[in-house]
Amino acid sequence: MEQLLEQLYDELTEVAHSTNRIYKAAKEPENYFTHPWKLHRPLRTSLGTKRISLEELLKLWIPKWKSEGRLQANPIRVQLLKEEAELLGLPKAKELDIYELFRLMMGLFETSSSSKN
Image: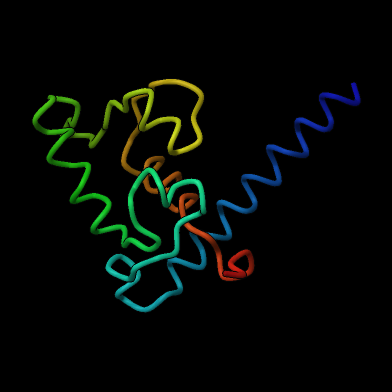
């Protein structure tokens, strides 16, 4: 029972943090999509940069998704490969809708409260 409560606590905490990141992004000026956000340290190496905007990140990924036939329209869904899913914190390859993808992408960046570098 204690393990279930700990797991529930962890999941609720993650949801609260994700919601807070989305809320902060929505409150940002219009350029939150083009603003270069600071990546978490482990991602800096894999993406080859310290800061990147959501726009730049999507410009890297969308052509690849289209060329490999992994991007669907109506509703917009993306089939992620295992490496992409792991980058977003998922344990395995998965198909996501655009809203879930955006929520997970916001988790790639440090929040103002967690960025001390």
